[in-house]
Every structure is written in C-alpha cells, then in structure tokens.
Image (cartoon, rainbow, N blue to C red; front, side):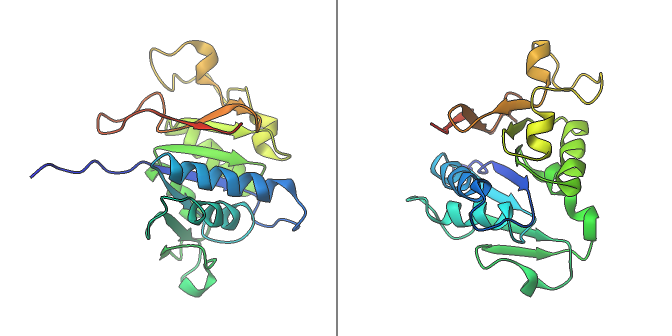
Length: 191
C-alpha cells in the first residue's frame, strides 16, 4: 500500500478583529482559498478577523474538503471557534497556543498586532518560511527585514533569509524552500 503524503499546513496569522470594510479580510479570504486550491490546509488561531476570513476563503475553494481548516484556540471552550473551523483544538493555553507556527510548514502574515508579532518571532526562530503580505500591521513593518543574524535556512542567499515581503500582485508559496522530503514545492499566485 502506497503511503499518502501529508498535505502541508500553512498558518495564516494576522489581526484578530477586522472592520467589515477592512481590505485585509478580502485578502485573507483569497489567501485561504488559494492555499486549499494549491493542496494545502489552513491552520489559524480559530477566532475572528484574519483567522476567520482565511478559513472562509479556504472553504470557498472548489477542491475544499472537510478538515481543510484547523483552528487552534487559546481557550478551553470549543464554542469560541469561528464556525469556519472544521477541526477545533481548544487548548486552554492562552498565548502559548501561538506554538501553532511550530506545526506549520510555512506561515503567511496579514497585518497583525502584538499576537502576530509573537507568532512571527516564533516562526523566525523555528526557521519556518514566512511570507509577510503588505497589509497594515506587523506583516508590512517586518517585510524584507531580518530579526537577528541567525542562519535560518542554510544555503539560501542572504536576501532569501528575510521575511519575504509580498503584495497582492506577487506570488506567495505553499510549502517553502526548505520542504521536508514528503512535500513538493508549490506556488500560490496572488495576481
């Protein structure tokens, strides 16, 4: 029997609260949809804002399947999850649940405040590929920068060791440059 490869998990992080007119919501929906279209699953903090929008977008993908959206909650109550989460893990870990980036194959940041900043720092330390979309917040502020001098992905040119800045017309990725052997590199067009 042939072993089926695990589908990559991509953490989508960003603002926990969005005004309905905020363009970050539409951007997060498109990111979620395109991630699932490219064969990934979407993991978020399971709450509102960018997290809910990315999961709603994932569910709009034509090849969406049950289990493509995963919400890792800071509380003990699964009822706190946005209804777009297929799989809900109520951790009771509060901010420590930001460890979700440790289980992601890549991280995409859309805006964000202090919680997003802590997730970005953790992803950086864990050497996860990070795409920072140019949306107001920490993703825009950190796009194209390095947090410290650690060698995150040996063998990559220096410019590729920074937070990868992207705008909505550029390409993001699903998987990453340092894919585990079971993963194939995939591109996610955001044109």
